[in-house]
Length: 485
Ligand code: FAD
Image (tube, rainbow, N blue to C red; front, side, top):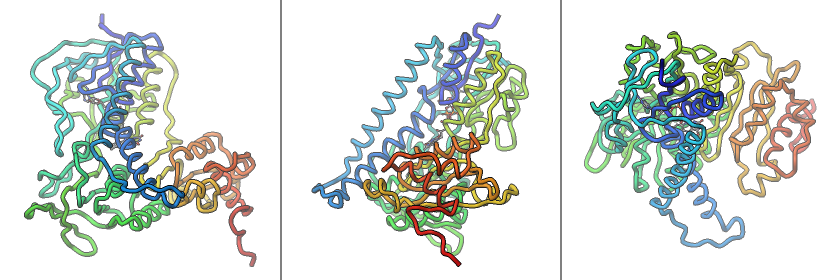
């Protein structure tokens, strides 16, 4: 007889949410976690970066205080205090997760799990961690001391992901760090090169630039945040450039070398050259945490990239074994991991649940902030839709003006015939909060007319969805009407 109904390996936003739901469904649940509860999101990702980005935002706002009629002299950054505030928020939230797991009756086992059969794991004392200065966050290999064996009827693999490494000469030099290593940086560097212009790289670039570093961001594709609508990537690039960040797109980093005190980053592309830096932050993607899990012992296969394939019920090909979150490689976002966790827990508890990936909002907390949901204009056209696009600038919104933050726009992609909302793309203040209207619109198959007819409170940033919809209908109120021929 197995000891538990369910054992979950990994306590990130996938694993801990699954554990809570499964316990609420009446299952006897164990969760094995080798680090701290909350996973990457709470400890090394979403929350600590946003805490520090908020400090950056406050710094920039206070520096610009004169524009608001406020005198603020001698504004300076206390980076140690910025990090301390971040640590406090992380502790509060991870302690909260520990409390929630306990309150829901989940048995938390500290240690590194390895499969000894499809539904049996052996738990070892974790290896030394965390290891900063660019190295892995977790020691991949646990100590040899086995703590206990855990048996369960069902198993969920929720082991998450780790920064991908760049296979170029010099990537292992001191001063070359990943996103994890960036949390070990104790002083704002004078010069930093960020390799990778997607969400993670762009956020770190935005943060260090706000704190006064000379930042160069290098992206292989032709624009920053290449997964976003191309107008958003272009706008972010122009905004970054306006803030003094050197943006190199269509550019590949080929090697890094130590020359005297400086790291020299060689880039190819339009013109090959070396860029001097004190720190190089590699943010080029993630790889799944599947090493040292002995997945093969359980018969669990991975795809060519190392991720664990699952169906819409989060089932792997092995009966009673499920996988959720980053380790499935579906969409490497905390809220997707959590929804997969809820789905897996419900399925295991006997409910008919399945995940739907049609509407996944995503936000990038650069300055200006970015958020999107649904199809980009190019993706909609490629999928065969005839589309209309509707765009409205924050500069024409009263609330954005009063906030002193009116850069950016909202773009809606809608079907040409019925005006159903297919995608919403925002760059500007509170984009991450505003995108929920787009997510709801797509879920409810709302049209531009319905967005436009919904009374939005004034003056709010939320009016941007309504104003963009009006523009798409050819009835703009707060921007000039289309020219009559
Ligand atoms: P993880 O959070 O990676 O958790 C996996 C857990 O499993 C870890 O705690 C690990 O210690 C544990 N584990 C691994 N192997 C074992 C083992 N063998 N035994 C026991 N335990 C094990 N997403 C967003 O949605 N919004 C954001 O703003 C955002 N910002 C980010 C910023 C950064 C810098 C980074 C790096 C990521 C960000 N993400 C963001 C992504 C988000 O953090 C991940 O998508 C999310 O954490 C994935 O959750 P998970 O549960 O799958 O895995």
